[in-house]
Amino acid sequence: MRLVSASTPEPVLEPDARTRLGQAALEAFASRGFHGTTTRDISTAAGMSPAALYVHHRSKEELLFELSRLGHERVLEVIRAAVARSDDPAQQLGDLVEDFVRDHAVAHTGARVINYELAALSEEHHAEILAVRHEFDVVVRDVIDRGVAAGAFATPDARMTALAILSLGIDVARWYRDGGRWTPDEVAAHYRLLALRMVGVAE
Amino acid sequence: MRLVSASTPEPVLEPDARTRLGQAALEAFASRGFHGTTTRDISTAAGMSPAALYVHHRSKEELLFELSRLGHERVLEVIRAAVARSDDPAQQLGDLVEDFVRDHAVAHTGARVINYELAALSEEHHAEILAVRHEFDVVVRDVIDRGVAAGAFATPDARMTALAILSLGIDVARWYRDGGRWTPDEVAAHYRLLALRMVGVAE
DNA sequence: GCATGGTAAGCAAGCGCTTAGTCAGACCAC
DNA sequence: GTGGTCTGACTAAGCGCTTGCTTACCATGC
Image 1 (cartoon, chains in turn red, blue, purple, orange):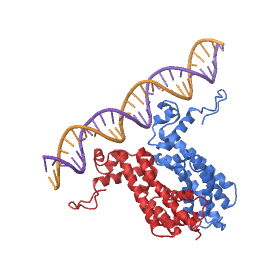
Image 2 (tube, protein in one colour; image 1 turned 45 degrees about the vertical axis):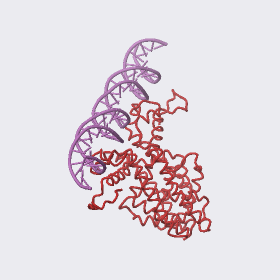
Image 3 (cartoon, chains in turn orange, green, cyan, purple; image 1 turned 135 degrees about the horizontal axis):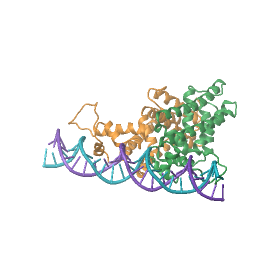
Image 4 (tube, chains in turn cyan, orange, red, purple; image 1 turned 45 degrees about the horizontal axis):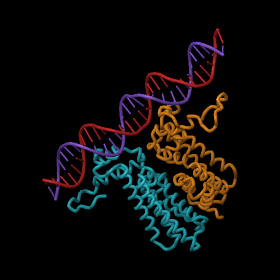
């Protein structure tokens, strides 16, 4: 979040105040929700006074919006990059699901915020985020459509199948816990198989 | 919720105060979350003063707990009934998913509360709800285990597959909107197919 | 000598919940 | 039936506290 300043190299261990506030807010929003989190929770966790939040952000809502926007754009980049690695629809869908799911397991804190705190955004900010989310659908649906056109996939409703595949990944953010039964890679690999089966690809 | 009183038959159109408070709370919690909902929101929507809430419920949290407990027990009954209708694992899993998904689409308001407001419960109440949710996993896993044992299903990890199938249904509550592109029955039928494919049943 | 980044103190509003009391109907001796 | 008592649902008012956010001010480094 901070512009690089060559004149103050500073230790990597201590991120700047703006970043610390963002991290603290992300964790608080993920565990207690936007309305369950106070500005004092955030600023205290970042080691600052309540007023410091307003030096770096206009409001609590705008801080959520910024975290949400950054998170959504990062995830969109993840799935676009996965699709770009191949021309084969089955490979594309498999890679997309694997990367999407792994990301939701590894970054489940952030993923919880971007998936479950949308309703706390202002109307304008909400609309802006929904536009990015719509791109998720488009990317997945396009891959499925191409797979169907190539005869590799079979599904009675590509749009609903795309939604279901994204659902699978999103819900990982809800239930995944660090140090639980599975690693992110294990979940990702299994979900790749499930998604390919959902579109009718036989092993 | 109200005990029948023969001496005051009253019109069916107007539920009693306790029920109205419950319905108002469910809708408010679903759309704004537990912490985003005030006791004044709830009581006003039920057509009463703020103090009326405390005539029928000990606290806002206990009202959430009661809604959550009732909702979970109802859903558990839905999936148990679906499994009880057949002895064939494929039929059982198909029926279970179809009924579970339809329920989450039709009753998405209640389903949002029971799936996404757990963190607002007290520790004791949370634990009690988790016990019911564990039963969901057990029911689905048992069906899949029996299908695998019978040679009807094939999956590298029955436990994770069970979780993924429940995920699919739970996430319906997040995205489903009344009057949207699909009816609950259409979603349920499609998800039945997806779930059966996920366990390796070919059409 | 002035941005930049921070704080102490506190404001107005809103919060969950309580208190003291009203009122309609059920109950019952007479 | 009638008058008296009791009970349970409900409210007006408000308490003590917390909320998001502001203001006035201070320290540091270019």
